[in-house]
Length: 116
Image (cartoon, rainbow, N blue to C red; front, top):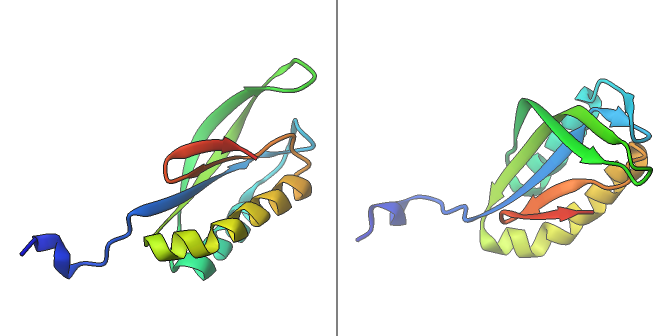
């Protein structure tokens, strides 16, 4: 018997990066959006972890560089929950993108990065 057979296996993950800017480059306190993201992931998968501080950088479509504080919010789940709920997560990320007026949102689905 494998020692891990007695544990709950959470082999999938979804990570959403919450920016600290609105409308591309205007600084905001992102706590409200971090909390919304955590609440969403907790409701979908039973738990979430927010990691902060971190700094992200990218080049806007207008050609200027943006460096900002970011918060990574990650949740782990089993394969069935991942497959059943990943589309809900994409829709939630689109909601954040519109709310924060971002050109794109960064997320990882099972370790694969996407600009949404």
